[in-house]
Image: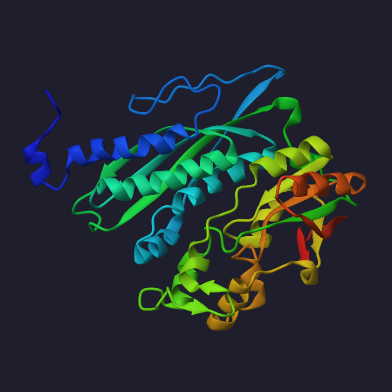
Length: 344
């Protein structure tokens, strides 16, 4: 007998829509299958058997995050196939900061009304993010929330697990005075600071689809550009060079995130003129009259990750990054000091 409840449907939850969504998302999930996946979607838990060959002391590393209020841009544009990439990126980009390789990912979608095609579009983005990160999508949950969320509203969060050999963990103790700071370019705003972004651009009333000469695309397209996933280039840099520190530049910008990979007594000195900042940040700063200090303390300013490497191996790191489609460049150095971050 098929699972169906007319009473539950009348309360606002259509469980059959959930089943339809699972069927539609199955091909997207299949794209992410990698060695180690034991179970398909639909079970009570996702099963994964990691290959521990060559790992002496395996350490599991976990990360969880969501897309935040960037979701509202997707809702306004009625485009839902990109925010899943953001969700994966915000988790796996954190995991690689300690040198771990992401293994698998799970998502959670809370939605006002379960429209199978919309849910499948969201999951297609999650799957694309997993493919870019080289990890498997092994499970998830879609929860219909009538009366709590409007029918067109939804939120998206995720969770990822990676693995690293204990002796290879990248921690602040590696960082030395004289190390070089490399910038890994962002694709734009990524998924941070959107409460301020939405306020500055009045997105609820703006025409987000009009072409903008300064951006080379519409404002909506610029805001919805998915977060860049750095897993493969960063792991390549770790193999090729002496990587001493990695910082994922998310909410809090340079001033909050870079110190997280520094030991006491060390400061990162960054040349502002060296930072390659996409046009969307200039438009945001000028439209919102935002002080420069606040910009660097809220947004990535074009630097999605900062990677600290030994000066002697900086060229090897840059070469490895470029070979994996991530053209990094030098923006500063590590010096002795207590100020943590200096922008000059």
